[in-house]
Length: 190
Image (cartoon, rainbow, N blue to C red; front, side):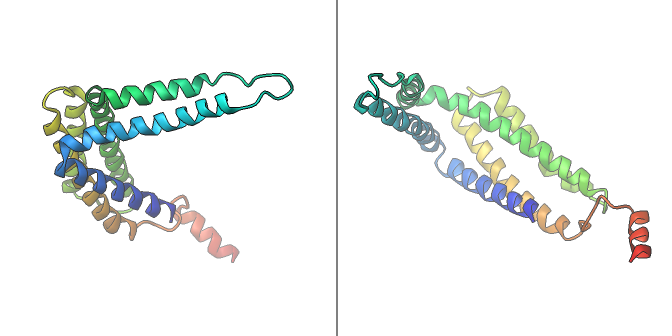
């Protein structure tokens, strides 16, 4: 049951990210970086306000929140320079696609233990893996095109993950760790 939940969560997240990157690649990247900046900025501000608003207890002033200042500065940097961090984000998304492609190939390889898996099922994960490698090794060239490729790859990944889940989950044995001998022994004991 846990595998189903994680698989569906991965599928939904990949689908949403893919749609956003395909429909609004330029704006999506800029706003995503700015949003991450705001998520760093707010806790930094709250920490600093809390520090300056705190009353000394027992004659001792609280320790200066270096983490809060770091969070505030990183948030400001992300907000001011979203283009730079968009390139960094391209590295991260390319790496995620590589992980997704490898994960699907590994899942299909595991599924071969209990049923035959046609070679055609490996095509999409290999393409996802290639797209991730291209995005990882060419981050600065035509960022919008690369993010659209990542978006389309994310959509394809989501659809193929869903198809694979429906195709192979119904054939997975209930307890794959038990051998036929273990099952026969269990029948004799009962």
